[in-house]
Length: 232
Image (cartoon, rainbow, N blue to C red; front, side):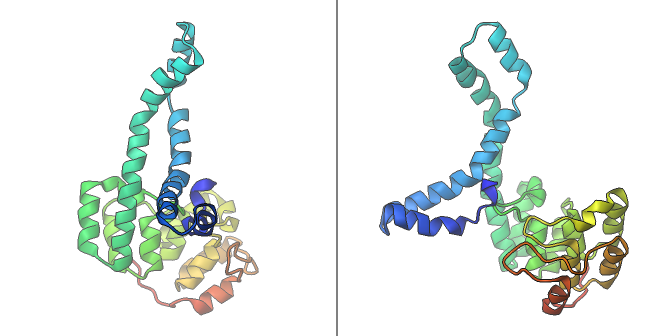
């Protein structure tokens, strides 16, 4: 999907299209925002209750009237919320990467829903805090209502959550995270042996190759990881 396109991929394109002057910077910012917002706008429009469209059609509204008087007004609240979340998640992830727990807590207090938001690459605050080795911020996010996905639970070593999900859907053990890692890669990299054991018992493939730029095996991930066990 467009929203998972790395924004940095737009840099060479905008240089080719607009040169290296001020217009390139403006268009880069515009396209970077547009690529993320477009799927959210489409989702907001599709979320307008069909009964309103049907009623407008029954009353004789034209297609343009349905768009301007039904779809746009009906989707504006969701679009505004998407824009608000987009701005908030960028600030929150920035503070998480810098390890600024106080600022992150302030943002979460003002907007609790950001604990479960995702950025343009599909990364959640919990995942970013985990990748950047910020266990205190992981705990803060969990305390503020963050709900780790199955893959994030594997990265965090949340054995009970992992086993519960495996029991509910055994096929999840062979699925891939949005960034191309298998559950086994994540558990092995972050040094959670009991989570690794649970995944292996569920049939995790030790020869699975990650679908990303690394293209490695779980054993390679284990060798490259911090091998710590800082569970929240």
